[in-house]
Length: 348
Picture (cartoon, rainbow, N blue to C red):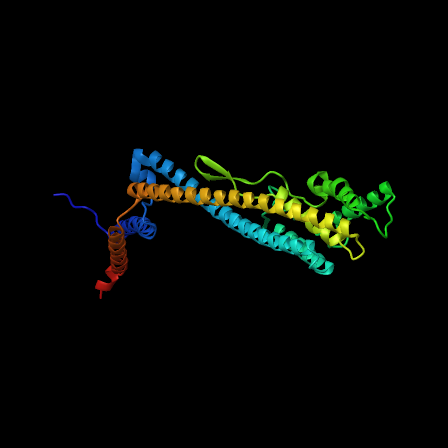
């Protein structure tokens, strides 16, 4: 028979080692209980670790697109609301123009309506969502439309310059610059139209023609913004500006009729263009919604695959934590008892 050397110190060291190992196991068990997934994927999955990494990468990619789609959906919703507001304002202004054409409306009322429409248009086009201007195209950090009524406005300066050129070129009397309908048509078609439908629009707009293109699914992209440079916007801005700046009590009847007719034509055409734009925006919203629904289904499937690989039984994890806690408490108790052992206590 062999006698082994035993001491309280050796027992204490063995208990300390066992306690350290149990504490390490407890940390892993607590993590698994809290997260619902294995604490060490490589150790638990072995050769299937690569599969887990692939699933997690695709899951995070899908989640990123879903989050991006939520922002795009908010932007499109705000865009549609602003376009609806513009269309309603344009429709009301067209009705006002129709009444004015028959002579049943005072000029100051029509001018006021034009100014209100222009202010409403500027406000709607300068709408921002989450700190980004939704009608600025890809220039989302730049206010797209210049405020025509603000002092020093580039748009107002460009209009004044065009009016001054008309007076200079034609030698028209500033007190009666449009004595005939032909004069009004000349100014609106030759001097005013390039400010809105041509290169002069850059004095009004800082928006880019290029819209924001978003990835709405793993293999699909779509435009998710609208530019303030759209023809429907320009035509409405021109009509409102013409009436607000040119209509006066001293205007000759045929020139007034030409002015109102031109404005009516522009607003009617603008409403048609805006209807097309609202339809396109609605289609973009539907595509975005459908893509998000499909991504949600893919995300659920991917999450189930990850859970089947990495998931732990929550009841088993909770039981293991409880057992390890009991072991730790027992080890602490035994260690304290062992440390109390001393030969001196038995010598008296």
